[in-house]
Each structure stands twice: as C-alpha cells, then as structure tokens.
Image 1: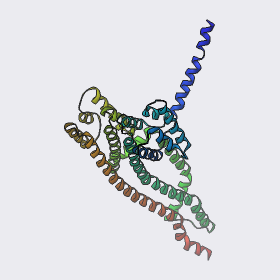
Image 2 (image 1 turned 180 degrees about the vertical axis):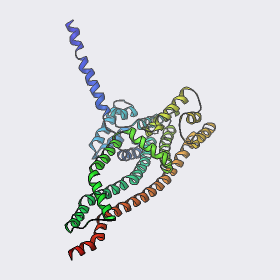
Image 3 (image 1 turned 90 degrees about the horizontal axis):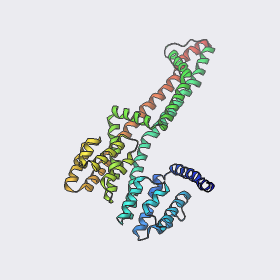
Image 4 (image 1 turned 90 degrees about the vertical axis):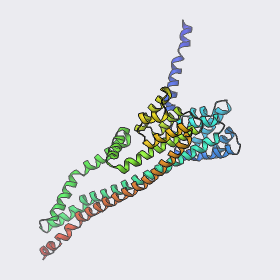
Length: 375
C-alpha cells in the first residue's frame, strides 16, 4: 500500500503544474499588428526566395531588437525541426490568433506558405490603416474638447471669482449678464468635482466593459445613420476579407466563416456568423441562405454569394465584396471625420465663448460703474 501511495502523490502536483501552465499560457499576450506586418512580410519574402521555413525563422529572428518575438520565432523553429507541423508550432506559442494559425495551416498544406504570409501582412496592413483612421477621427476631437472644458472650469473657479471680489471691494452690485455669469460660476464651483468624477468613471466603464461599449455604439448607430453605415461597412469588410483570404488558401467554407467570425468578436456579427456556419455545415442549406436567415449582413452580400455558389466563383465574389466594402468604409470614414471635425469646431467655439463671456464680460459691463465709484 505504501508503494501505491508513493506513486500517487506526484500526480497532484503534476495536475496542478499543468493547470498553472494552462493559466499562464492563456495570459500570453499576442503580438500587435505592426509587429506581425513586418514579420510576415519578411518571412514571405524569404520563402519566395526558396529559403526553407526553419531557416527563414532563424534569419528573421537574428538581430531582432524585440527579444520576445525573437524567442518566439526560435521556439517555432525548434518545434518545426523536431517534427511539429508549422501551424501547430505557431499555435503552441499562444501569441497568434486562430485566424493566423488557420491560414498558416492552409498555406502549409497547399505548399503556398509564402502566399499565406503575404496575405496576412496585407490583411493586417488594411486593419491598421482603418484603426488609425478611427483613432484620428475620435481621439483628437476628444482631447480638444477635454482641454477646452478644463479651461472653462479653470476660468469659472479662478478668474471669475476674482472679478466678483473686485466688484465687492468697490461696493458694486452685479446686474443683468454680470449676475448670470456669476451664478454660472457658483454652479460650476459646486458641481465640477461631480462632473469630473462622473466623466472619469464613465470613461473607465466604457474602457473596461464590452457590454457598455456595445450599448453606446448601438445607441449611436440607431440615432446616426452615417455612424451606422460606417460601422457596418467596417465589420462586413473585416470578416469578408478574412473569409476570402482563408477560403482562397484552401480552408473549407464552414471553417473559414468560423475563423473569420473571430475578427469581429465582441460584435453582433460574431454569433450570427458562427450560427450560419453551423447551419451551412450540418443542415445542408446553401451558403447564401444561411447568411440570409441567420445573419444581418446586407442583401448585396447574400446576392453575390448566391451568384458565387451557382457559378462556382465564390472566391471572386468574396474578393469583389471585400474591395467594395473597403471603398465604402473609406468613404464613410472620410464623411464621419469631416462631420466630427465640424461638431468639434462648434463645441470649441461654444466653450471659448463661454470662457470669454464668463471671464471678461463682467469686467466690460461693470467697468464704468467701478470707475464712477472710484471718483
């Protein structure tokens, strides 16, 4: 019995270590798009030059300033040399999404790994471009409004009370617009801490909660047509271009749809696409019918998919749809940026006017009274 007990004891630590290893792996941070673009471009160019995959990984890792990426590529190379498949070696690192792993597998199986790497670089370049455009359209206006709001609060808390004290010293009673300006200052003085705390709390909530972000975005899309069209175009462009890239590299349609759904995870499209993939794979319904019944994509997408199925040109139709929505997204983005800039200009003018009125108008209006009282 003691022998059995001795053999049984290491099992618990091993299980605990395995569990800890899994938790540690699940927290591994994936590489950002900029890193992936450079890496896949470099690897793709070396594979096109007939350099084998293991050597390409070694050459690219040599001299990299990013030690984490260099170590990851060396680990992939070691696994490949040990007989592990290329896509499984990428998956084991935990630093690449399922879309990347799926496309690497398709490229490896088809003997076109260089094309898979080139497609990934192109895909991430397009994503990075639109991400920058969205940040440019939203972050800078937010910063400008925040700075001007801070200037308004500062003027109401510091400058206007000084003007009010000056009038008290010369025993003058504010009236008309001057009295209104002082009341605004008093209200601002009483409420500004709650306002600032509320804005910070709201910002943290939006940043941390995906549900709140989706709710606000959904509310904005329901009230503003331009925002709705831009977001829908971006989402459809994202999963259609990913789906086209995967299917063109030999991955079956159902898996292509599921992997492409990961590119819009956190949006209503995610579950819709997975449901459509399940119905297409298990119920035998045509792809266009699955998209029509179980997703909220545009009717144009369903129509072109139907044509692609009937004419065996689905890859061509997906490519056409991807390009179409990319152009639409760029146009909507330009209109959205112009509209937001105009709104920011109006708000900025309003805040500057509020600072001027609250700070200088009382001095102009009460100036003659102050001079007369001095006399």
